[in-house]
Image 1 (spheres, helix red, strand yellow):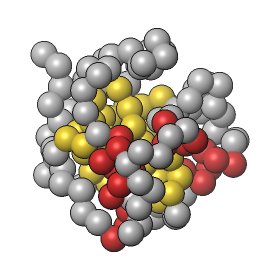
Image 2: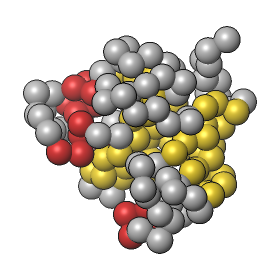
Image 3: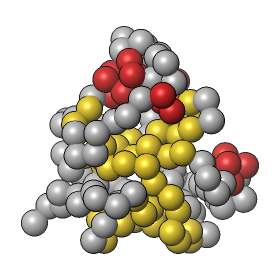
Length: 140
C-alpha cells in the first residue's frame, strides 16, 4: 500500500516504524532514506522533523512553528538549485509532514504541506502551509 492510499490523522502520533509499515515498507526495515528527515516514496514525500529539539545526531535546525505555518530547514548544505530540492517543491507534490518536540518521542502528523515561501539559503528554508484544521502544539 502506498502513502497516497492511506489517511494519516492530523494531530495523531506515529513512530517511524508505524509510517514505514503504513507505506508498505515493513516496520523493521533499516537504513536508507527512511532513517533520515526526508523520504521520497513513490511520487510523494515524507518529512520527519524536530521542532525546537536536537536530532539524535546532535544537529539542531531552526525549525519552528509560526502560527499554523512551519518554518523548516532542509538538510545541511542544501541549495535551491539541487534537483532533489526542486522536485520536492514542485507544485501539486504530496508532502506529508511529521514533527516532534522532543528527540525521543513519536512524531505528530501535521498534514499535507505546500510551500508558502522558499528562501534560497544553505540550507534551503521553506515555510510550509497545511490543509485547514491543524493547530500545532508548540512549546510554551
